[in-house]
Amino acid sequence: MTGSGSRATGHGRLSRATPSIPTARSVRRHDCAVGRWLQTDVTPLSAVQTRNTVREGNCRRAGSAALLRNVLRALVVGLPTLGLPACGGGNGGGSGVAIGNAPPGGIWQGTDPLTNLALYGIVTEAGAFSFLRSDGAQYYGTLATSGNNISGTFTGVPPIGKKFADGSTRGTGTVSGTIQARTSISAAYSFTTANGKGSSGSGRLAFNSLYFDESSLATIAGNYADSFGNSVISVDSSGVVFDQQLATGCVLNGQISIINTAYNAYQVQYTFASCLGSYAILNGTTATGLGVFDTGANPAVAYVGVANDAVPYVLNAEYTK
Image 1 (cartoon, one colour):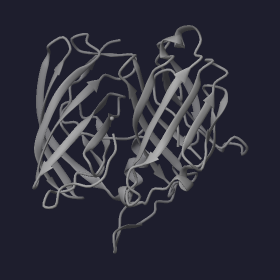
Image 2: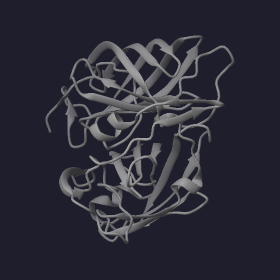
Image 3: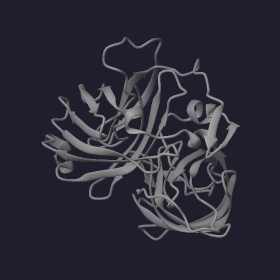
């Protein structure tokens, strides 16, 4: 599980370098550093079999991750269905919460009531989150619980290559509401763009039981073909990530870390070096975010969402193993 989403590198699905890719469909991936969309052939997952057995502690229960896989293949972390601001032209780990407080962790999904676009996200047990709207907008921050009450702050960035309606490319917000652990989140938000445009809304998110798949470095270790960079991404048994992209000159060195072995959420980070041309702005910067790995899909899929606050780089991507 590696990569990074829609700015500069890691566009498109990764597939094991050796096997051929079966019947493919064409999707758009955005090259953020140079501001263009790329067409990428990816393998459809219509035949994917969902795993129905999940567990938490000694409790086993049934659950389906099909909607998460089939509606949006780019990952991964979500704010509640909060009606986040529509767009115009053009993240952390940890484990555990205080006893008596509802755990916020989960893969959460719903619909943005203001845009009617799908929302997906990951919240760790410690409350770090990253949410992705189906148009590519990302919202990432931290969430705290007190009993069944939640509150948090977040940063929002518009879809790749676009701006918010007032022309800004970033904003900040707050969220508050209630949570039924491993079931649902009901919350209200307020968001203000960098140019001062405010919006607010409320909504609901549902829990996805894919979160109960246990995580391990052995699960994600392997080699992945980076079709955009014309290179091979490697993830070793210690979670060390390396990619040397022929297309951009970028050398990526990073780390995938286990947040809590009981849950399906990974910390992702990588640093850029040796990038050429328009990608040179990435040199010396680090992208961070969260990921989910779905071994129930065939082939297995990693959903990754990362952002880089130092430069305009956001990645929303899926990679097959």
